[in-house]
Length: 311
Image 1 (tube, one colour):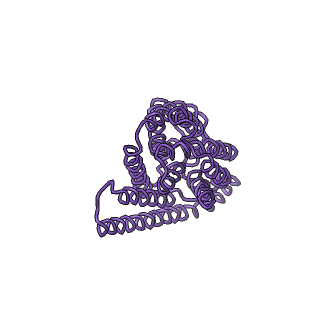
Image 2 (image 1 turned 90 degrees about the vertical axis):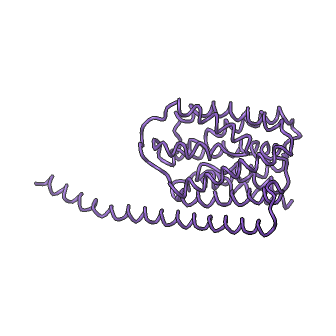
Image 3 (image 1 turned 30 degrees about the horizontal axis):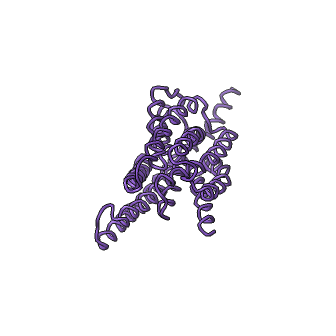
């Protein structure tokens, strides 16, 4: 019972992050399942089954708040489904011994990517309003879907930063579109795992706990995305994913290291994480201060325009 409650809380927190950042539900939830000893393929299958419900709830919430670009959803969802089905089939055929280092390595890489991406560059807004082309979205969907199934998460970490980097969509629509299209990706991955593992490969109680927590958090996260600074959240989440998967790799002797060396690695990672979050907070406050400094000119401009009109 304690495990079910913890998984429900994990699902809630993971969906809060995913719905407001556009990534990390699968990575966070799968990391937790691996920490409690779940088979890598079963962990990914369980998370994707839960994600069918959480992504549906998240997509509906984002749609109601106007956070979805349906052209992007249509163009990226089908390639994502193909990639995730293929990834689920590949992971289902790997042995646990072969899948464990693969899964932890992918999750660690995604965590490093998230940490660096949001700490160093934030959320670019270059070519806002220009259409996102199919020739960009198709390979992005295929790669993101495949990585999502094999790594237990990756649709958001691949898709969200790529769309943000394009500068063609405002951040809230990037997040809403990625979260909405993930419903199709999760559905295809679950089908692939069902074929590869059978129904016995999924812990339905665990999937249900993750689902309940995620559904509760979905509308809250869709509202938060309009308010919470994604740069700070990205740095915080990236650090958590790096630390937990580094622990998995070191604890299971996938990379042999003596206890003092392990402690040194943890200490360095924690310092880097704290520094990254502090930098992101500083950058966010600086951006907000710069925006605030530019605003006083607009109130004076309005009276001057009115005076000119009267003259």
